[in-house]
Image 1: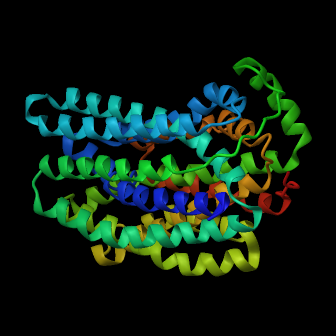
Image 2 (image 1 turned 60 degrees about the vertical axis):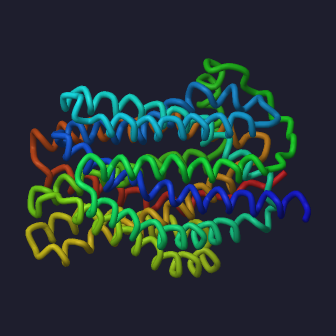
Length: 407
């Protein structure tokens, strides 16, 4: 087995078990429902979402310049995953002793541990994209992103019914103790996929040597790469729709209540949407490339906030359509956005460009905080309508994102 093939299967191993992990700590259903169960509201959900989405973005800004200069990044990838395992296990232990804490202390501890979880994602995120780009042959990439989604779909088929059963069978907080404990154990298994990677050594471009130099280099790279500019606009505008998703659980709780069984149903329907849409995205990526799938993601992100408002108060089975479409949108984003970034970068600048994307995506990182406060002030409908317009504005930028010659 040659190195590229070995790495191909190692990445699929990690993706499969990471999907199992992600189900038990799902950011759009499990985490916001935990906040509501503890006694939090939209502000706390916004704060947690900002931690989960924003911390890796800010971390990329600070650490990408250092990681960019490393010819090998596997150590940092393993370090990031190891810290994430420890953080998830710690959340399970804290929730096991939940009765010993007042709600504000419990929420604060969970937020702190999820901050560590997200910060460690900086090392694993930047390193993952770079190692993936240089470890797979160019002709393997499109096939990998589609197959990764297929493998993760199988993992979701296993984990979704199990997580639904855990949430409904055990009472709070034991149901969440099991969820985070299982997530930590499965991520430990996923860790060994990265351990098996044989990373090629590629000397990076040494255009940036420090955090400040990265900041100074941003305007030059933006001027030099129209595709990068358009990609950044795309990530920011579509990101507003992504970071709004956790608020749908809070909104649903106002109309339908929030039980462990309901949370499990939301998660299950979302995962069914992800799995079924893979069939569509798999064909779309062959015919239209990553750009076609990105457009599908934008379309879903535009419709979702409107659909939430239209279906609220209707029978719950009908409202579940929202979570199905969430799964469709998430699947499209996972398949296409990372692949599109790899296409517009090269082996020598990929980690640096990943950092630049993070540095210019701070609006997305801060938006959940603003959204939580705005919802308290003006209510859900104006915020949802505004986000739908922002996401729709990304549609016409996709055409101008052109692949770079791979070296």
